[in-house]
Amino acid sequence: MQWYALFVKTGEEEAMRRYLETLLPDVNIKILIPKRKLMERRGGKVYERIRILLPGYVLIKTEMDVSFYYRLKTMPGLIRILRDEKDPLPIPEHEIAVILALTNQGDVIEFSEVYREGDRIKVSNGPMKGLEGIIESYDHRKKRLKIRLELLGQIKKVDLGAELVVKEQTQGQTDMQNKTI
Image (cartoon, rainbow, N blue to C red; front, side):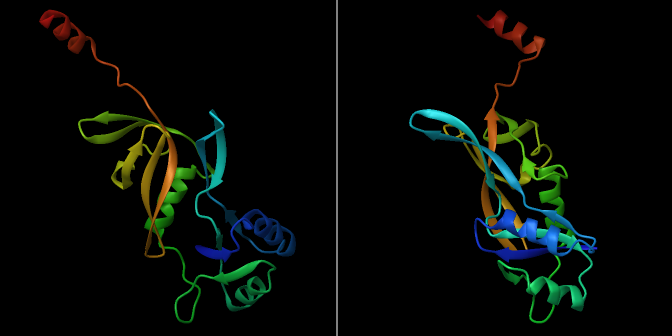
């Protein structure tokens, strides 16, 4: 079984999930629509929202053969199955591994806790822990990390929710600061 990407009309991702589950009950398929929690400001108030990570994409893990490919093509709302010149294109393992790590085998990417270490962003807790290499920047006001994801050879920059925390000082650092005062 491999991961494949279906391209659907933006906003119709959940409808495609329902179609796949009801119209293909006999097929061994895992459906993933990665989502992210974000903080958004509206009218001076801050709200927690869940947004689609890759609008217009539904990721599926299945055995793709010719008959299943043509069954998929008849699905309402499907624009196309991402493929090369002739065959459906499986998502490379290293690309899907990042998305699966972020979603923690679920659908929603939770908030991460980050801190600054010099001019670098480090992650202390959350789904981005260990994935600091894909972080582009942090927006303190919006509480978002901008990360770089690769999907089928294309680089996509997306925002993830993150909270900047003040890194606690060790007792030794506190003692040294007290001596210098």
